[in-house]
Image 1: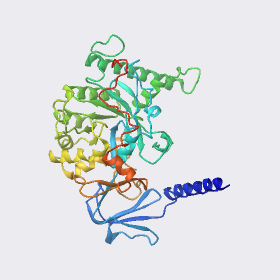
Image 2 (image 1 turned 90 degrees about the horizontal axis):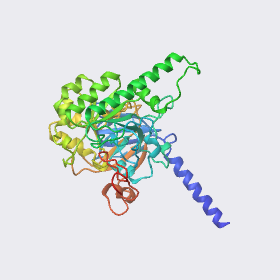
Image 3 (image 1 turned 120 degrees about the vertical axis):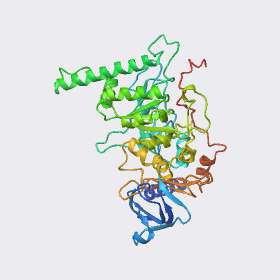
Image 4 (image 1 turned 30 degrees about the vertical axis):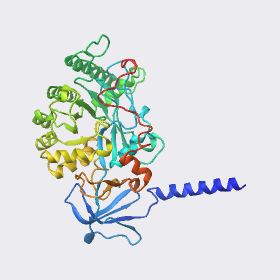
Length: 445
């Protein structure tokens, strides 16, 4: 009997904790006294941020914001508050996309292989990341469908999904060119040259056009519909711009090939890595393509990235390209994401544009600009509290909030472990490098 009572009481406490953290049940909370960086406007000294039910209700200077009488007031004096970071290219969760059966696999969904209990998600929260685009690797011309996630607290992938107004799970499509998808000794379906890479992509996109047209001509008559093809269905979404293409590319000629394909087939393209983007910044701007940059502070490893430059972001931004940053985690550890902005500012990018690139630029690339990326009334209460200047090497992420729920607290020893490392911080992680995705057989294991 005593055991049953203990279990019942424990269940009661769990339910109470769950209830208290539910965004739909919380009372207003006002964070006061902080330096607030809203991104969409000037920095606010002695600022106030008010949230309720997972949304931002007000933000501004203390003198101009009325704090609700029943609000919980949190003193954030001496700290900095800014929007949660948006990582447009990551591999947290240990997921993998296509296998070695074909170079183009649009039917593959990274959704089906992400382990949300992997500690890499905790590291990302420790780095202030609240929204992330999880990608399959780039050893294929097309390795599958990406997935946009909110780094909420949860136990299953469904707890992290982002859906549109119709309930559709949001994500893009991963494509790649350059060295990664090439197989120099290719005897099967994989390309051996850059030209063949582009030809294979064109071939599949033309098939998708034909599939789309057959469906259109059928006008709902099931007897005239083509046999269902999951791969072509996904590519039709690309052609109709319902699914953006996230295109891995490094060299300037590969960048232009990616832009050429986008123009030819009309899909929306976000260029990733774009190592030599600074060489063709005007061409990228004229194509109205976006650029998601991986800022590496230890160059090496690939000949096609030998001309990497810390000034890449500055030059693309000045050319008028929507420019953001990504971790390509592990290439940049998610905990160190803010370093991308700091290094780019050191190379000449303006402070305001670098912080924009960490937040709102990524939100726009993922079509989430109405929900995240800035601190303004009506948006999701995704924000971080920092110990100081976000571009200082001495600054720490103190707390991370997603939709009003605190998902990281550096003062908590369990959370701190994932921020600073140590025994237990790495357990459960799967090493997954974007640049190297090969089967055990290929690796000779």
